[in-house]
Every structure is written in C-alpha cells, then in structure tokens.
Image (cartoon, rainbow, N blue to C red; front, side, top):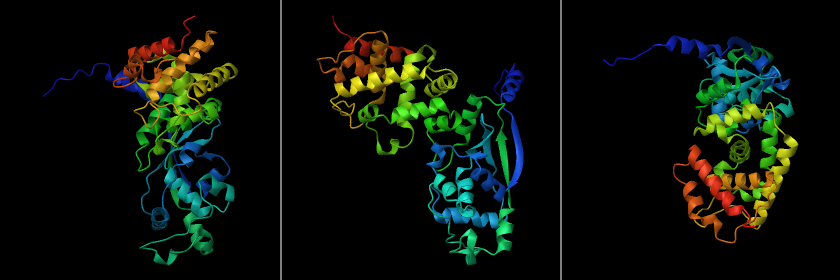
Length: 352
C-alpha cells in the first residue's frame, strides 16, 4: 500500500472551500420563467446560442415534469448586478421558457419564434400536438407549480472559482468553449469590447476559421489573446486558459479602452493591407494558423506602441523557418511565446 503524505491537506481544503459560497433553494416552474422574463435570471448570450434541444427531447423533458420525475438541480451564479446566471441547466430552463412563456421577446432570446408544441410523448400521448396555452387551466396550474431546485454560487465566490464551476459542469452534449464560458462568467464592458473588436472588418477579414469555430468564441478569444500577450505575457506560464482568465479578471477592472482600441485598429489595418485584404494563411494551411497569427499581431502592435513604423518584409515572411518553427508543435511555453514574437518583431522592423 502506497504511503501518502497528507500534511497540510486540511488547511488546503479549508482555503479552497472559503472561496466557494453556495445556497440551495426551490422554485416553481412558473417562478423560474417569470424571473427570466423580468431579467432576474440571466442566460448569457454565449449560452443562448447553444440551445439545441429538438422538439422531441424538449417534449420528453416537459413530460418528465408532468410526471413528477426527479430532475437534476439547475446551477446558477450571482453576478455583480445580483442577477442569477444559468451555469448548468440551459436546455432545461430554455425548454421551460419555450413551453410556458407567451412573451415574444423572451422566446426570441432563446432562439424560438413560437411556443413549444409537444410531440412524440409516450406516457401522456393525449398531450401530443398541444402547447401550454391549449391545456385546461387546472393542468396549467399543476404544471406551473412543479418545483425545481436551484443551487446558487453567490457573489461572495470569486470569478476564477466561478469559471472552474462552469467548466466542471460544462459536460453536456453541446458543450461550450473556454471563451464562451469566459464570456458568461466575466460578462461586462471588457468582454463586450473584445467581442466588438472581433467583428471589425480588418480583423475578421484576416481570420479564416473552420466552420465549427466561426460561432464558438474563437474569434473573440484571438482578440483576448492579442491584448493578453501584449500587455500581460510576463505572467504567462503555459496554461493558456488560466492565463486568459486572470488577464480578463484584471482587465475587467482596469483597461485603457481608448488607447488599446487605437492600437488594435492600427495593428489589424496594417496587417490587412499587408495581406492585400485577404486572410492570414500560409501556403500549406486552409485556415488561419492562430499561434502564428497572434505572434505577428502582438509584434506589430508593440512596434506601433514604441512609435516605430512596422514594415512588411520583402521576403516570404509567412514561411520564415524560425517563425514557423516557433509557432508549431509544443508552443505553449513562455520561451516559445517570446521566441516567436521576437522573430516577428525582427521581420517587421525597419532596417533604417
């Protein structure tokens, strides 16, 4: 039997537990829908885009609620405005909204144009083809009063703990990317700024992504990496997600929006011109090599911030062996990050 040293484990456990503050409460189905309609319960935009339950699956969930079957709790987190944000339970909450709500705006917020019509029910077959509004008042009351448990991570829990909770619970069939989780956890002015920059013409023209990556936060994450590697890379130790979380947390509290916006626009305007308005691609790639792309962008931005004018290299710089080598393979180390940005600076620096 292996010998394990548990010295200090209890202290470590106590420290980590103090970062988490959780409450448990039960609400009726109607109350949950009402809270959503009145913006007391929030589904982050990145989560709204992920409501994918087909009518058959959604109907089966409604049937389970009618039958009083055990339903897993909904996990929520309290944000800075004291709203509850859905962490885990998007499909269930959205299905309840789609069934009970007759508010067009609420339905639109979860990507539906009309209320859910039940289909393919096996146990309660007489409900097939009906909406909530079709039901007798007695059944409407019965369903509306069905309870659901909510587990809430309070505002006393720090943002890094909240991100960890999102990640641990993010195990559904349609999971979120780290940036989509980040957008939900840190939503606010800085995240809005990052997502707006991702949609700017020069930046978006440079970024050619796989179809699956075009709506999953990848573009916004590239903007975030640009600012993080430019402003915060002394803190990079190889764990990208944690590094970006810490930077987002700090930038959400203090960020020079005016100056950073100018640098961003100048950087990607220059790169767009360098690429003749086309995407950032090597001859051997069909999508943008992101590590290569972010290193070049950071290098150009740093030159601009130093008052230097970046110059597009005359050579076939996209295939520069040093830059490509430092941008491929095991790239998530501080030394490799420094190596590729340094090489990109050399390539874009004037020889004057």
